[in-house]
Length: 355
Image (cartoon, rainbow, N blue to C red):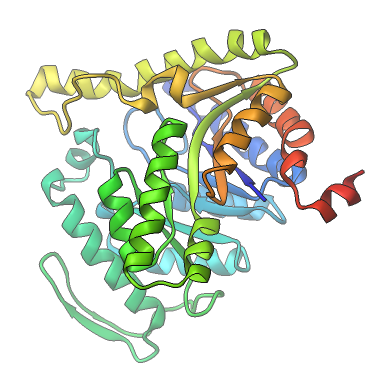
């Protein structure tokens, strides 16, 4: 059974419209809760308008208060930009507010936008080591009833017992992002599920096969491998309309405009400062509509989702509101997806109940 979630990633090009887009985002969260979407994923991006609400930790509190059932996850919190003790406290509070509905998606931080690190006064070269040290601190903070001390490269801490105590024991569910095959295999060897960025279906199938094989080679049994696959998610951009032609008419210009906006500020920083984090000689899969966008009628989208289901992954993170797309268009796409696509992948008992 393939599960579905929504990546709430709203673009705001005009600073004067930020409040409007944030309000639209909260309305989209309520709609997803009403329609039975399993998880609402929140992003973290700063300074460029690529994600209007900017801070997923703060925004998650609003979403949890406005919804009843849907889980709220991070895809991902940029851990290298946060103090780990503070972040652990905030997430423990969110876990209590949502009564266990929080999914803590963790990542080191962006691999593309150097200005996000500059704005926080953090050398981007330190992002990975800060993330790894911070993750260990957070796990200790959630699970050390007597408190703990930490002597590391970036933090020296003497932490009393963390309050509030997490609602979920021993701590909120944690999942890590892996944007490369090497990252996915690293998590496989630890026996952990992961969040996969946008890739072609061919790359997704190959990476997941390698992930399963690495986990088995590390000594995890078939049941554990199956659980990790079930808890892993892949990301796609999705537009559903009544016909293929209508979906492509809406989806392709929005997708292309979104990609242009996402690279504009980092290219300006490169011109001004000569700094670039990752040079791309060819457009990556995430920037190519034919690979990264699923746009079509319910029948077409369902067929593409069936291809993803065949890889064995547990769920798809669907981005519905792309770039300058208006909130109403995104809402119609979400509703059509949940009413005409998602039921085809429900368990037999659930399909029978729906009928």
